[in-house]
Length: 162
Image (cartoon, rainbow, N blue to C red; front, side, top):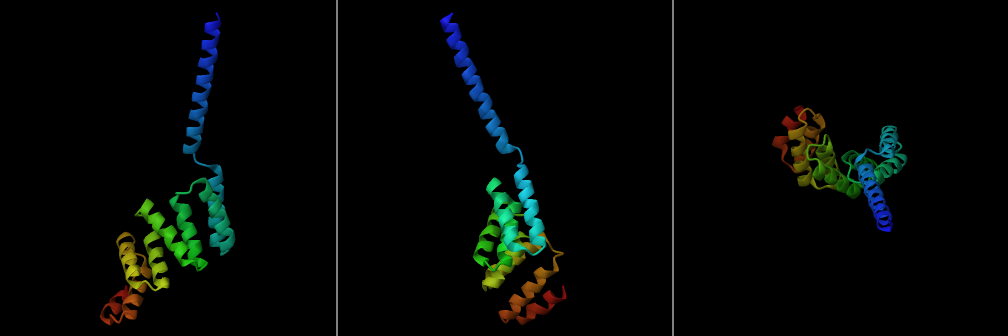
């Protein structure tokens, strides 16, 4: 009888541990309500031009899901608006590494490089953006500006006409 009781106690303990472990694993897979709230609030603040508040909310979202492309993209945009170009570059590169076809990431990275004066890197980023988003007119505008700054005047007019 004593062995049967010990077996039941051990079996119950193992079963409890298994259930707790499965619950922990499931919680990491289930979308976080906090993430959804923070990312939404961050985007609202960003759209309103309140970049410091937007940064706070997006950082909270990224604390929930640190590799989320949306959170990293918006944090990159916020850093761009705040003039923190190296931080913006890092975030946008992270987005592209995670999701190479992320809408707007290559274009925004091109803007960052342009503002940093890294014109050849900017051209590469804008070329990548052109392949993914040909209707985005500002791609051609920046390409034209870069070629003009580089003294490559024959390439400028066709780009400005796009």
